[in-house]
Length: 396
Image 1 (cartoon, rainbow, N blue to C red):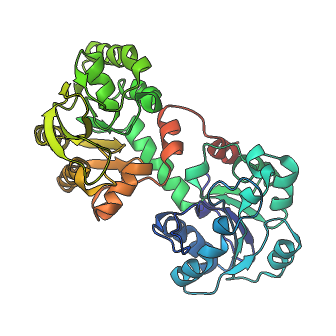
Image 2 (image 1 turned 90 degrees about the vertical axis):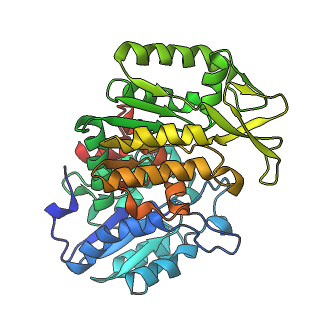
């Protein structure tokens, strides 16, 4: 793997693609800085060796060019505080100010460019745009795992302008090494915990995992499609009606491969999708009309926890319920705590980005698992066996 450990950055300007796509509140305060702190080791190594750092990222999904709420200037103060030095900011990523500030940057200094997605060319993977960006630095470093599955100008196209000077940063290298460990070197018993809303979002991953895991736990909204497919009644719970046959075929495949599939047996039900709704407990396959399942029930928590605690390798992707609402976060929290107990007993646990990462952060458990991925979609695609454009560009 081509990592920044193979370079001394003394006197060099490193152009680093980071993923600073962080959530901001209405006053532009960062509510979760995991993606920023994840990039710090890469930045610090380069500064320590006497290099200069030019950071480029996207933030959100701006539709029509520059937009105040998607400006990366909102990140400058927090990044400066974390690095213990003032970070310079350019109000564009390829404009005159960006070019001048990059040119004048001295060893040990940091420059953050404005949001790449203010240009449509970024997402289109435009070669001319990538070339303009490439002129700002001497070495290209990709440390943005969260966007590695996108063939964008700054993640995949730009690398060709650095044929002998392109590397993975520490965050990216760590993500790939941990994903690789799960995929190809998992100690048994290996348990995957799948949650989230839809079977269709996880189908390819589930099929891939059936080749590797001993246990597959299924929770979250997708579990109701399985319950309905098996002849249950699920009230107003989430259902992908056209995926019921698929759910049954996955159960058949699992059986044929000797994989133990564990589905919820009971459910926390509510008469409304609201934190203040009336709640109760019902069998997952017998939810009354007018009610919907919003979390796994107490019996399911026990069954899931037992399997998790007996595992040596754990991959968790997707919550067990609507964990954003306090009334329905108990199942997700219990699973997180079981993963932590297993980790303390020597298991390797990988939390697969997105909502699962948000959940372990909410419960203050991020430091008690083996690894929390910063890339939900990228990790899923990598696990599914797809080649990620951002990875391929460095390896070529």
